Length: 485
Image (cartoon, rainbow, N blue to C red; front, side, top):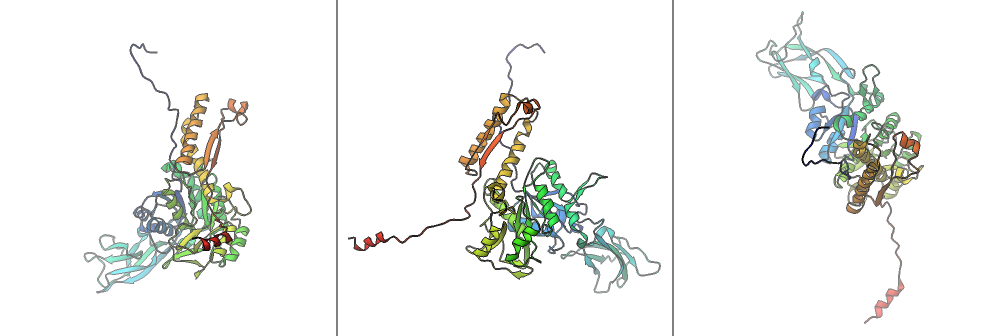
């Protein structure tokens, strides 16, 4: 030890640790996108987007939501609800999900100096333009012609006046174009490549926190989550992210096959949409000419509610406005009354209702209801709050892993959590109450020797007032007012 002479100052760790902030409802959304209009390398890569412009620059945009499912979410989340951020993953791979065309014929004329290729989704780097002569001459991009997209997403070849393509020449064009119909459920589910170690599909949810430092709050796959195998994997991933975090999955019952509200519960049970980590939605909703999966807009409703409450998911999305002017199933209008909507809610299904004050999301139950009645697994808001509390504790006290097990460590954790929970209860009313305790019987000597300490956290998020009853009684005593002076 160096020789010292004088006055010195040292520090000890603060005894109270502020909680680490999380993005309570961060959506992780997987699907297909017209990446030929943007960055064709954005395949099986999680991309964090905070604005509509960022999302379109990364993935392109098309109103063809049936083929390009991410575009539905991009439009709803950024344009209609104006909430962010979101993590998007495209699985449409131009290396495999493509179709090739060879020597399609097009003709220029004195009035036609630009020709539109007949298929959408053209991959510009695959376009080869040749003359119709024998042998054919291969034209040079930038010298003989330019190549781009029109406003509808079609590739357009424009003849350059200084090039070698004649003003009235014919050309033969070969190219490849994206074919979304080749994407199947297994592409959404994904996995881990045993050779390269690359993650694909839903497995990429485990890459969000290491890459962005954000914990996913919900998992969505619009247009794909109605496949039972996809919905099952979504629920499984939501229950175990990075072996430490948890969230929920928003899934849809298909409206092309389930057209009546009375058939939804049977389909839900037969296809095992019964997880406490699933919020099951039916039917679709529409706004103008656009149709949305209800899960898409429900994510916007939830994120908007969270943002209005300090990023704490303590407010139910039920009875909150959606951006809709109708509900549809298989293209036909669905008009639910309160009694039909209540029936769906009682079967663990969230729906849309236009009853008092416009169209609202309607329903508080997870897919586990009614076969499961434990409040922590059946009310969506309580499920989300407990997940959020757990995720926050992991992030906050990760810094204390491998510290010496001393009374100071125990007190630091207990005091910090109690102060945080007290603030949630008294300041924000996000919970009715909460505390943390360090019990002797939950910390056996064998665990302490092995470096394991356990804390017991109690918390009570408020449930939604799903039913408000008034008792109205005729009271004859007020007849006496007829005789008062």
